[in-house]
Image 1 (cartoon, helix red, strand yellow):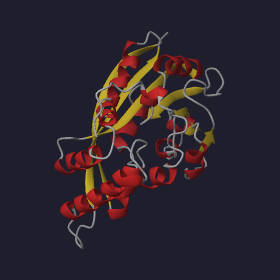
Image 2 (image 1 turned 135 degrees about the vertical axis):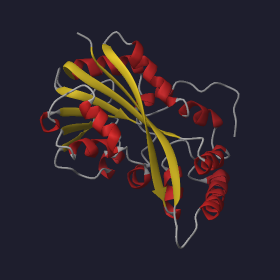
Image 3 (image 1 turned 135 degrees about the horizontal axis):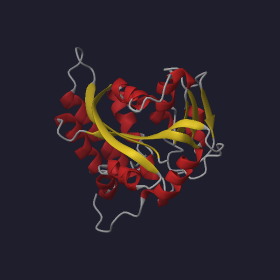
Image 4 (image 1 turned 180 degrees about the vertical axis):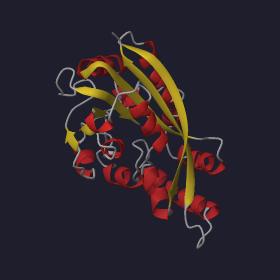
Length: 266
């Protein structure tokens, strides 16, 4: 599907509600983030002992990234406006899930050492979000924006992207393929300094149900109607072509995990 008109900014596309009926698939099938990327968040600016750090995970969704930091001993406020996403999140003793938005987190001034936004910043109004991050960060605190971007040089990942493209408004794919460009707002913000960009390889294996589930976890993918039925048929054919049961009853996505870091300006 294609449309000639440019897609309006994603933060105007009902980001607070559009994942409400995707939460279960999101929790089950979305990829995690590489250990090296979490290492970089914790160590790239010598934040100190992870067990003494407090983070705000903004747009935390079902808490994938929150739990990765909490597993290292950090405390995490997982800020997520969508109740269904919070309810689908796996509990963790060091994660507190809270209602809030990127522009109004509800957290106290200078209350966190770090802010992370994983697979989320492109849904925020960037200036208002960065202003809020600056408010809740301690002096010298760090912002980390991170995305798993599909590696279009990988043959299977490209084939999957083509299948999705037959079922959705192509403007979403075009826009979301460029979502890491949203980090430009962080690079140019007078509120932050010491900007740096890092990239890590990442892979994600899914079985037959997982291939369907990860597709349906995307907010722009149809969940009913003719396009939905055609998508299911195309995903089935894709899985049959790329898996090799019983020895390899799964397919493997390839991602580039892009991480952008900056610190509060003096």
